[in-house]
Length: 477
Image (cartoon, rainbow, N blue to C red; front, side, top):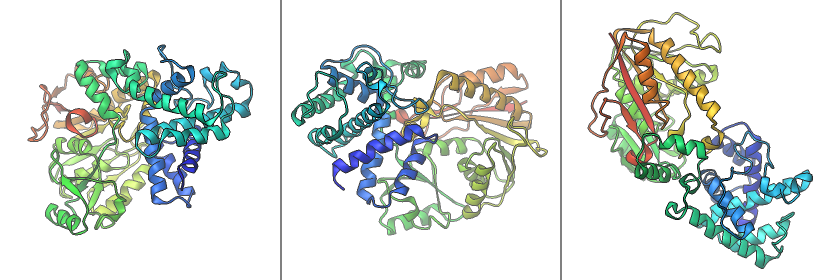
């Protein structure tokens, strides 16, 4: 399919995504699934550009505004029309031109801006040239600023200028506001800066705007590491051993995961290295009684079962029944036999059945998810200070509730995929201050990852190459 047509589809994708309620990866999959006429290269174009836009949304929007205005925008501005829960068409700089008075024209203007966004992504990813994007814009641009003459030459100059400004904004040394350069909401960038040196913060900003690699856990309940690696080599799958987690691999190229050898037989589970590190450091052993209080889809639960060699018992809980149903299906494929999946009684999270005292209780708490921004860049546009406070309150309540099920001498493990101290270290400190019957217990040492001075796990994409995760362990005295 020609680029012009793909740009139209890309603009439609962005437009529909903002009206949807689901996360970016799910909405993208649904959009592509409904358009069976798209080939593999077309889908790659749309997927790559779509996520590139979400990663660099603020930078792109300021570049577009600067290109229209003919000068670099110096005032801090919100990204137009995002987060996705906002009404589409919330474009203050377009409204000033009178577009908001006419919803039809506003919708058309919205489509044009989305086309430029996808076009900028296509140019930066070396899919296309600015001139092709400009030609597509001329076709339907509804109402450009009055000083822009709607003809191909003028639109080409505008697009080239937008590309130049977008590149300029991508160089923090030339832009005073790093939150703009790294395309973050100002309030969120300030939270990320807490406790980090400037150089560390910049490295994190760069890393979070990259595409994350695909890591797989070899399921030792179904095969051995050597047999799994031999099967991958025989199938000519390009991979490397994880430097962080024993028995894990990282794919060198993005492929259909179900095409991996013996994938349907449960040999492999998709799980980021950071997530696997949390499971390894939970300290479970065969024969233990373990509680996974926030099992979700069950990635860590299945890993714990493998670490326990199917010996002992895992009680998995979650607030959503469909997640536990998915966990049971995945467990069956993975050969897991020691998971007892139960469902909380109500939305308050109280267990529906009696809960045993456990050797290890894992609270992989709901959080901002900022450690996974490489895979879900829309999170930074969905998150708000109020939503963050909701997560922090939920984390405190979960720790209090599930700590009562840790047997004397047992361990409570608290984990998040957040990069914020207020969801991590500060929550751990608050829990210990309020619960004198628990004490801090350093995590088991790891040959591949340096723990903090307090013996806590804290990994980031910039420092470790995996998603951002935090884990701390408490001993019940």
